[in-house]
Amino acid sequence: MALKLPQISGIQQIGIGNISVYDTWEWYRKNLGLNVPVFDEAAEAALMLPYTAGKPRSRHAVLALNLNGGGGAEIWQYTSRVAQAASFDIQCGDLGIYISKYKSLDITKSYEALQNISLLSDIQNNAAGKKHFYAQDPFGNIIELVEAESEHWFNTNRFHCGGVYGATIGVSDMERSLHFYKHVLDYDVVLRDEVGHFDALAGLPGGKGRFRRVIISHSKKRVGPFSELLGHSELELIQSLDREGTAIFKDRMWGDLGYIHLCFDIVGMDQLREKCQQAGCSFQVDSGDFDMGEAAGHFAYIEDPDGALIEFVETHKLPIMKKLGWYKNLKKKRDPFKPLPKWMLQAMGLNKVNKPVN
Image (cartoon, rainbow, N blue to C red):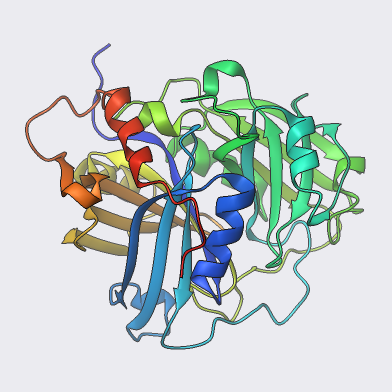
């Protein structure tokens, strides 16, 4: 069957709101291998007015990748205001993006490498039978390391882990959310669906309650320019059965502290706009074509059924070797479903940062 637009190439990045972009990136660079910057930009977020109290806000953001494969992190700091923490203790089952998942080459090595932060569990098997553990970064964000199959890697250097493998998202109505993630984001495979109390969650805030947990993935291999780098991904949807979850970003702005969005790299933004409209989740933000110097493309945002922000990015320009002014124009005529050559993506490693940034 011939492929049709739109197509999702994979999770491009997860957004992390913080109060010090370079301190945060430094920790993620050293501990999770996110050492290849795609962009490092200070600018005004003028299009996110529905989520920034109706006013443009200045910000500084760095998007960094781990070339072992997987998504990156967009480390995002307000410069026009101080990012706010939630006014309540966020608990397992609250609504929105709760945990970022990173894939591990060797879960024991990952566990040993992260002894310098708060570990929230031992190494255990998750609901889908994969070895994993939970930890908390120095900024209060919960992360999960999950051992990934050998075919899900772009490179396998000596670093213990790769990039973003997925996320855990709190939901209020599991069936409604499963429908959304299946029909909009193509997560059509249920790997595990369990109800009960879970030892693995007991170390998380509020994790001793009763939950329904569903791990979902995609049956079709992702396609597009960055599909080989971004690779396979999984999401876990979690619903508290003991209480009503509170929206993690209740009374706060996008860009405040925590996981601000989950971003998917896509091809075919016009077709995706139509697909989302038909699914009842129209674009809430639509940038049109943009060019920020180091990055160019088209982005848009929708909301999942509980208001978690899902971003889509269609990339038009890829910085390969910034010092030499080498950029790849992705708008020129090419097969939109074909991955970029591996050597070209690996060349981005020439931009790798090996020392503290400031």
